[in-house]
Image (cartoon, rainbow, N blue to C red):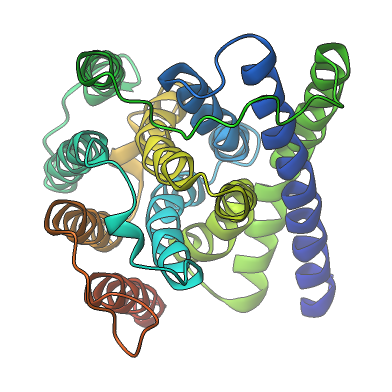
Length: 337
């Protein structure tokens, strides 16, 4: 298969995932509203999980069907930095004022949990790179710890929101009066099936792309696959901005980042050749550190709430986040062998 045909196939898969992801997010939001979860923490948690479905399917397919663990890990971590880049996009598109001044400071809690999990991931990756194998059977001991911590984080965020009596998402009554619950469930099911099928094929095409271009699988997974599987988050971010639900957008992005790290734990359990982090490139540490720095800047922005914007476009925080994202891509590209 020639190079351009591989790119065409990859672009087609990304397009289908993006369109299906949009309907997946739309019908997921409808279901949340019709079942009473809309406008609540539960609805946001559901939306974040739904938009991360492509990463989940692609990751499991990558470590089982295709046997490319670097693409699986790169996809999950690359999606984290891409989601944080979407906060920059949100800040740029929100013309009235800096997005950090218009959203709840409660997002600091989920962002902080994200930093802890990312740091824990980096800690374990360093241990495995130095031959310290903490595992039972083929599963790294970090996998169940990540899942337990995620449950603790979600419970803590829920209790915080309940105690503050705040709603993460702005209430908009009956946004989907023209869509029935049955139609939403049917549409959600078919969109999910399409995402699953495309997600199974995506690592195969990514592997062909890496071979054809002579690129490392970690680079392809972090950049190309992560972009393709993050398209549902793009759809949610743009839609949320359009209806003025900025908190919903931020919650989805930060919540998706937390779930992406859970996906790594799931991938680890599905990878039967040993702990996932023991069989990947150390270059992923660059992406982890980039995600930590970008999340840290987001936390500063949410806490400080800067009023000034650079050339009336984005805040300084968003500019630094964008620079870190570019430096991350550059470092990964320069690691090509």
